Every structure is written in C-alpha cells, then in structure tokens.
Length: 327
Figure 1 (cartoon, rainbow, N blue to C red):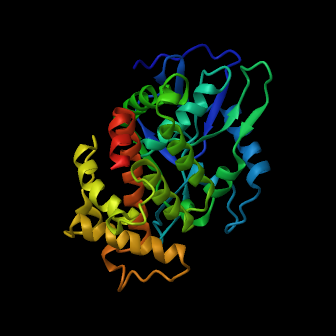
Figure 2: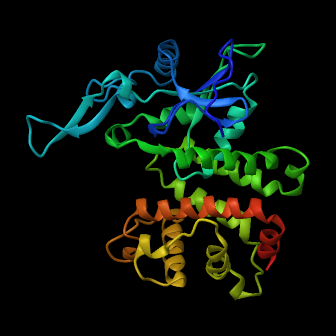
Figure 3: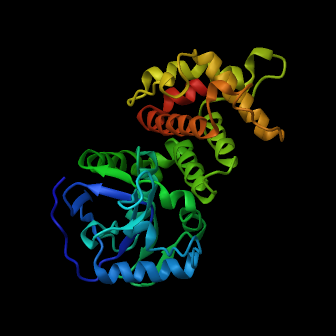
C-alpha cells in the first residue's frame, strides 16, 4: 500500500478511540482511498468535545479524557523507583483518525476486520462530514468501557508498519463475508465477528468476557451433543478438535507460553472447569483448582487468541470448519 493522502475536502473521518501508538510513517492507505493519519487540531478538539459529552468527566484523580492520549506512565525523575503520569510533548500525542470513507461503511467494516488483529483500532466515533446527512455516529457502550484507571496507566498498544500492512490484508479477507454473496455462503463468520465485537461493550474485568469467548468457539466448531452419547459433550468436542485446528492456524499459538508444558487435554479441561465455575456462580481459585491457568487475565488472553485464529481459519475454509462442527 502507498502512503498517498486523498483529497481532504469534506471527508468523513473516524477517531481512533483506543490507546495506541503508531510507530510507522503516516499517512498510510489501509484500503484504497482510506488512510490513517495524525488528527488535526480541529479534529482533536471535536473528538474530545464529543467524548466529554458521551463519557463525561472521568473524575480519576483529576484526570480528563486528554490524559489517555497526551500522557504516559513514566518513571518520575525526582522520585526514584516511582512512576506517574507525565505529559508528552505535542508531537508525541496519540490522536489518530481514519479518513476518506464518504458514507462510513468502510469504517464499520474496517473496525470489525481489525478485531482479528493482534492490536487493532476501535473505530466507534465517526464524524460524517463527507456524507449527505452529516452528523456523528458513535457506540457509547464501547466508549464507556475505554476510560478507566487501569487503562490509564497501561502502556499504549504499539502499531508498527507490519501491523498496518496486516490491517489491509485483514480488511480484504474479512470484508467480503459481510456482504452478499459470501455472507449467505458462510453466515457464521459475520455472526462470530459481531459476537466478538459485542464483548467490547463489557468492562475489561467482566467475567462475561470469558463466557462470550467460549460461546464463539462453541458456535463455530461444536454441535448440540447427543444425549445418548456421553463422549459427545461440548467439552469433549472442543478438547478433541482444538489440537487439529491449532496445527492449521496461520499464526501459531503456543499453549506453553500461556500455561507452561501442560498438554492440550489438560489445558482445555481446566479452561472448562473455569467456565463452569463462572456459569454456576462459583469462586475461581487460581491458586489451587485452576492453578494451571495462572490467572483470569492469562486465560482470557489465550481464549481471545483462539477466537481470532478460529475466525480467520473459517474465512480460509468455511466448509472444512462446517464439516468439523458436525463431527
């Protein structure tokens, strides 16, 4: 892809709401005629004003929405061993926009495609300056979850040139399944992506994230178990099918990086023990029963990687995944 910028006259643009730092030359053309670039001063002002309306004053130790884009958690020079929020020089501020889609369809499709990236962009605040009807579009549920104390002190996700190239590839791969005729050929792909996107509406520490991730996996590769066959349970289906799928994934997922040297069968058995614990109101004990999983954060990170890989594998060969589901 080139780095040419299309005409800036009356163009619609989408604000990159999540906390990212792009370490690549900008502007960059993600899809033909649509680029990602640094926001102008006017765009920053408009985005912040709208976020203030939708999210309100965060009231976290006197912070405002600006802190997520203009500050970093860094060592304090006068307090050895301590860190704190330090304001960046203006050229380092992390305000980005995606521009060039007159009616906003590409913004929506790109947002969904980039859910499958290692570090994507949340495009949930659109300014439709180039559209006939004008105005703004937004997903207030998602925006409400972005600005909490934990995310404020986290380092931004770093987006490299390689990631931008991947964005273009993901869009080209996923977008056809959001429209006919491919939508009807493999409706489970759009369904899985929409379910995955819906999880962004939940607070990051919500246990419903895990339940949702299990639901996507089960929807794609498991069938309703036969009551007369005790070996046909959902847990058994997932435990037997996932090792095969992991060998097919384009991006390898090394289970040992998450959980150590445990075998696949043990990992999935423990994951389903955790799922059962959540679903039936138990208290997850990661020191004893669920020690293999280390923590809810580690387990959820693993499940997110599985969901991304599984959806991508389904776009590659929908019929194979469908056949596997039936087994």
